[in-house]
Length: 231
Image (tube, rainbow, N blue to C red; front, side, top):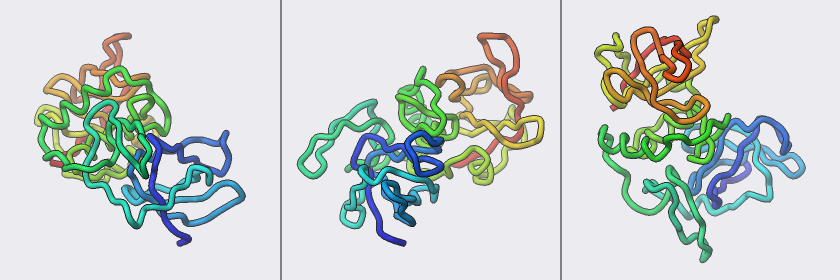
């Protein structure tokens, strides 16, 4: 380990390889900390403390206050102002800030989910201005103090299995696979007939034992693999 840092901006892109045009695999949100594990010219390889995810960030976005600042609360509003090192920072929902975490209840996670409705899909995104399917579920669960891993196939290894869609409860996560059997998508059960997920945008679609039924084109878009419960 070389050292550690904290995300002092609304969000910081983390890339698969060192370089500004390489694939963005995730984002750090304000207040999240990380360890620096390698450096290469103007890039540093980091490991996120929250979920252990690794990637590369630009050195000019580094802030090394991780050992002195640890936020325990979560931003539950679309946008909020915080004071960091005597500077005003505009942070987004899901950021780590001062305050208390919410209790892991359906009412709390439902309120958070509605903030993201129509947020655009963005591979590697974790903010309401661009988010992917597993980033969406991870940040929703972060808001109620439940940690999830970053990717859909990783999240599917956690939690308790729900045997049938008919017995799923709001807040459970449903996972979907491709023709090769690899889990490629995740969404959160909204009610007995609907699911909220990031697919093109954050949206609510019909859901049953077969999978997600897209209400725009009247066809199934994802095939159900497994349902998991985390609280």
